[in-house]
Each structure stands twice: as structure tokens, then as C-alpha cells.
Amino acid sequence: MCGIVGIVNYQEDISNQYSVIKNMVETLSKRGPDENGLFFMNHVNLGHRRLSVIDIENGKQPMSYQVGETIYTMVYNGQIYNTEELRQILKDNGFKFKGHSDTEVLLKAYIFWGKNVCKHLNGIFAFAIWNSQKEELFVARDHFGIKPLYYSFVNDNFLFASEVKAILAHPMAKAIIDKTGIAELFGIGPSHTPGISPFKGIEELEPAHFIVYQKDSFRKEEYWKLETKPHTDTLEKTCETIRFLLQDAVERQLVSDVPIGTLLSGGLDSSIISKYASDYYRKKYGKALDTFSVDYVDQDKNFVKSDFQPNSDNYYIDLMKKELDTNHTTIVLDTPELFENLEDAMIARDFPGMADVDASYLLFFKHVKQHITVALSGECSDEIFGGYPWYFRKDALESNTFPWSIALRERQQLLNQDIAKEINLKDYIDYRYQESLKKVEFLPEDSEVNKVSRKLIYLTSNWFMQTLLDRTDRMCMYNGFEVRVPFCDYRIVEYAWNIPWEMKAYKGREKGLLRYAMEGILPEEIIYRKKSPYPKTHNPNYLKVVKETLSKIMTDKKAPIHDLLNREYILEILETDGKAFTRPWFGQLMTGPQLMAYLCQVNMWLEKYQPELIL
Image (cartoon, rainbow, N blue to C red; front, top):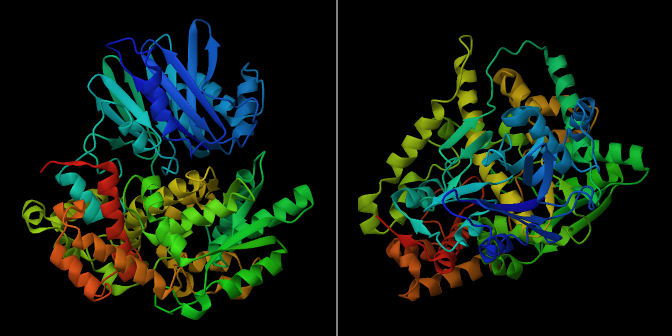
């Protein structure tokens, strides 16, 4: 895993702008702590920070390869999981290889297939390739946007980078937020509309898209999307296919030249990943797999049961680590650490995020990195197999908005009065919601229940899942650590998309089909455990410290948050410990303390990035 940056300018020679590209790439040093690489030609500069995972010696970047008079040069962030199949095809077509890195395979695959290369890839990736003869840039991103990529036109410069901070490091780039940016931050946030960043003029390359940029043309195309078609497999055949695809995805993603393990919460999804990984690891290497979980100081004492978080994880983690006989490590985090890392979590994202959930991820990965460099996670199962409460809750199903963010009135009330007069968050959210729904394809025979489930799964996969993937990438890469997500193998998502809801919600359970498919493979207590999301801290000291900090911000008349938000409403939130905000800010867990932490992050963000406000 790595960080990439680039500048293309067809109007002037930029080959001597060493300090500009160097400063941009240095902002990504945490993504790639192992190596630094730069490339210069008349109209292009490329930069790369590397986290060495595969073929440490022969995978250095930027990587160039010459064919005739043309030199192809690539910077790449990601991992291709079907590398060996591609390598064989390329060998059969006359290509030779110096090493065993997926970087070399990807570059030569592009030379062979051109712009159609992404249709042949199974992996997570964001990469850019410069063609010296055509003076053409090709930029692409993986099917689900697991690896990030942003771009911006600044005067005559086309800039691209793994993170927004690298683009803002260019001397001509400016941090500006306008009405759309405010609507994204406070109407959609901490999610975001695919393709859009809160900063004016800085865009995100959408998942499953590529760009071809030449002197006189800029073209963006979608290379993949979900195809709606009848599901004809029986229940048993469906389960068999799911098991095969999951096992194959896990085994493909265990490739690494550095220590690897899994993240084990004791939930269904992480247990599936750990089961397949453990079996493969023991068979191939003859030793136990490393697994890791997170907990908080005094969590057992402070845990409060809720509809969204019905039980804590410890009992189930113990059950699975004994079942699989893994080398298990529990990382225990304390309340002060969570608060102290709120700012780093915001910087890792470049925007306010999921507060202590982000900070917890950041700290968890920091500790796990001391043991391994790569981990497999169970994320993204809930989105595609129907695991979230809103797939079943009447209020969410009838909300006519994004079901993980239904506190529309409260969000609007959070804006200060002057801005609220200019921006109607509900109108913006409704527009984005309807815009997204128009892309959902149905079959004539789809039942009404199946139509509703298609809508929810499409929305959740393209919005909520993107937020979680962003979170995971930024928090792990901030620690020079790589997390892989086997459930996001595009073959699994394609197959699951067309499974009818009546089968997917087998016996009326969330992820009922996936549970049934795992019978005889995992312990029944794990299979039929009620879903419990990533654990948040229940320590009352966390509420105390975020409340004290937000109170101090409110008494500071120079605090930039006052330029955006409603002081009186924030004071009401403080007085009621967040209960004035009657619904979760986002998802299932961002309630009182997390909302206050989010507001602290907003102020930190405004202080750090100092965006210019244009209404």
C-alpha cells in the first residue's frame, strides 16, 4: 500500500519543479513509510510513497517500462489479487518479468490491454500511468473505491493524489468551501456524495472509473457496475457459491511478503474471514494465524446494552480464538487516548469523521502494526448481505432518505442562522438521494419487498459502505498499515446483488442466508449471535472530556466553528449531554458523546485547514 501524487501541465516545462512535487508527496509519508520515489518529464511529475508488502526489491516506484519509442511510467497504490493469472497471460503474450511484484504485472497489463485493463483486475487499486509518446495520462480506481484518489484542475495544472492534503500542498491550490461543501459536511457527513469532496474544485475519482487526459481532451468513463439479472440458483447452490467465493477471496488476499493476520471481533463476518484464513495459513505454513481485537479500559463495567449494540464482544472473541487456536492479541485502549487522537483521526481523513470510532481505529491499527503489516477485515458484509438494522426497521424503511442519517431537522438546526437561510440541507439530501435511486435497476419480476431491498442495498453499498472504507483506509494507512476486505471482492458483490431478499433474509434474520451458509463451519453461538457493530467506548470519562472541550470551544469567541454552526443549539446539546440531538448523528453509534466529539473535530478541522468560506 502506498500514496501517489502527480502533476500534469501541458502549457509549460515542469521538469524542474522538484520542490513542488516533493512537498506534495511528503504529506503522504505516513501512507508509505518505507520508500520515496519521484519522476520528472517536461509535462509530468509523479511522486510515490511506498509501504513495502510484495517483492520489496523489485517493486520500487515510480516504475517505468519501454516498448519501442514509448516509455510507460506508473505510480500505484493497492494490491492485485489475481496477479498470477495475469502474469501467465502476459507471459504467454511475450512479456518477461524481473520480479514477482503486482506492480510490474499491472504496468505490463496496461501496456497489453490499454484502457480496458481494469476489466481484468481483481483487487484494490488507484494508479496513474504516463505514456511518453502520446503525452497521455491514464488514471484508474478500483471497483468500490477501497483505495482513494482525488484530482483538481488548478490553473494549467492537473493535480491528482491519494489524499486531499497532498493536493492542498501545491502552492496554487486553495482550501475553499461553498454551499455544496457545507451541505456535504453537515447534511451528508461524515459520508459524502461519490465524486465530491467538501473542498470546492477538488473532486474524487468515483469508484470503478478511469480518466484519460491529453492536451486537448479530458475523458472520464465507468468501466464496471452492478448488473441486475435473475437469480436462478437454489438455496443450497447459493450457499455453496457463497462459501466458494469467500474462501477464494480470503486465500487470494493472504498473499504478502510481510507478516499478515486478521481482525477478529467475534462477530459473524470477522469469524468467517478468520476461519478461512486460519485454515489456509495452517495448511500452507503449518502454523497458527495471528488475530487481533480491540477493547477499552473498564468496558465490561461501563457497557450499556442497546438495540444497536446488544452485547459486548469478549465472550465471542474467546470462543473463536479457542475454536481456531490462533495467536490472539487484544489491544486495550483508554479514554484519554481516544480524545487525544481525535485531531490525528481528522487529519488522516482530511475532514471531520466518525469521532472516537475513527480515533479508536487509528489507535488499534497503530498497535497492531507493531505485530504485523497487513490484516484482513470482515467489513462490508452487512452492506451486501443485509446486516444493518435499517434493512428491517419500519422507521428507516419509510424514511425516504438515507436510513443511517435520518436526523434531518436536527442537522439543519445545527447550522448558524445566516447560513441556514442560504442552505436547505433537506433539499440537498433529497436531491442526492433521488439522484442515487435513479441508478438502481430492477427486474420486471421483482417483488415490492425485493425492490425496496435493492434500493437499500444499493444506497448502503454506494454511500454508507464508502464511508467505512474511507475510514479504514485513512486510519490504517496513517500508520503505514494495510487492511484488506475480502467481502468487497467484486465477484461476491455481483453475485449477492441478485440474490432475492426473501433468500438473503433467510428465516427473517439479518444476514440470514450468510448465517445458514456457515452452518457446520462456525460455532452456532457465532452464527446466530445478534449483530453488534464495531465497539465504541462506554466510559463516562469520554463524555466528560469531550463535553469539557466543546464547552471551552463555545466560550472562545474566536473559535472558527461559530462562523458555521448554531451556538445556542450546541449549548443545548452540551446541557443535555447530547440528548437535544434526538437521533444518532450518523449510523448506529454516533449519539451524544460522539456528536460532541464530531463538533470538536469540526473546530479542529477549521483551525487546521483554514478553508475560505464562499456562499
